Image (cartoon, rainbow, N blue to C red; front, side, top):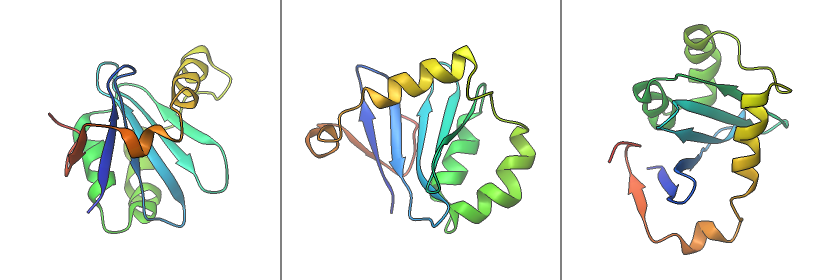
Length: 114
């Protein structure tokens, strides 16, 4: 089962994924922004993503396959990596300290929903 770490001050949810393709999924419910961190490097970022899509990806038995076969077609092209929205979201992700993962007091299971 995937654990979802929450970062209350940033209102971003992070889920490390067991996948050869995807390292982690980040989601900010207030903006509907989702970022997928690829194992090969880089991020794919989309806006206005329904929470149900994120939940489906995070809980799929093969998240990389689900991303390749379903998510890419549902979401269309990601934001430009040099676009303002993408840069702001990545900056928020990079502000999450690696050590925070172990010390986060609120860990959610099964869903990004509260």
